[in-house]
Length: 215
Image (cartoon, rainbow, N blue to C red):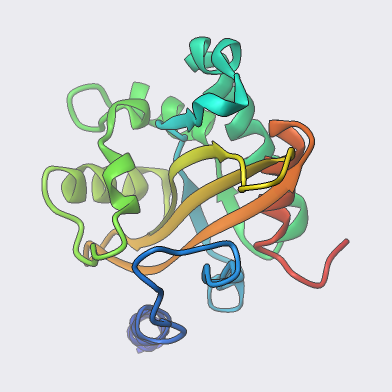
C-alpha cells in the first residue's frame, strides 16, 4: 500500500509540474520576456535515485567564435557533464544522482539489453511541445533506469551558447527535462540560463539557477 501511495504521489507531482507555471511567451522572445528558470522539483524526489543522462548536443552562435570548443565535441560534452553533475550533487544532495559514468557502466554490464546512454536520441526531448516520450527512446530509458535502480531520469536535452544583443558576455542555455520512465512522460522541463565572460562560468551559473536561494 505504501508503494502504491508513493507511486500515486509522484504521478500527481508530475501532473502538477507539467501543467503549472506555463506562461504565454511572445512569438519572438527577448531576454525580457523569456520564462524564468524553473527550480528543480527536489521535494518530491528526496531519497530517490534519479538517473542523470549525459549531454549529447552542444552548439554555439558563430559570433562567439567558439569553434575550438565545439570542434572537440567529446571533451566539451564531458566537461559539461562534469559541471552539471558536480553542481547537482552538491546543491541538491537530498536526491541520489546516478551520473553519466555510472549509467555507462550499467549499460556495459548488460550488452544487448541496455542502450549506451551516449547513443540515445535524448536531444529531441528539448522540444517544448513534447510530453510523451516515444519509442524506442521510452523503452531504452525505462530499461536503463530500471537497471540503475530508479524511476526518474533528469535529461539535459541540449546546451547552446549565445550572445545577447548589445552584450559581450556569453549566455549558456541548458535545456532540461525530468522523465518518469515507467510511464514515459515528461513531467518537468526548463531552460536554465547563465551569463558570464566565458562559456564554462556561464554554464555554472545556469546550473546554479536551478537551485535558487543558494550562493
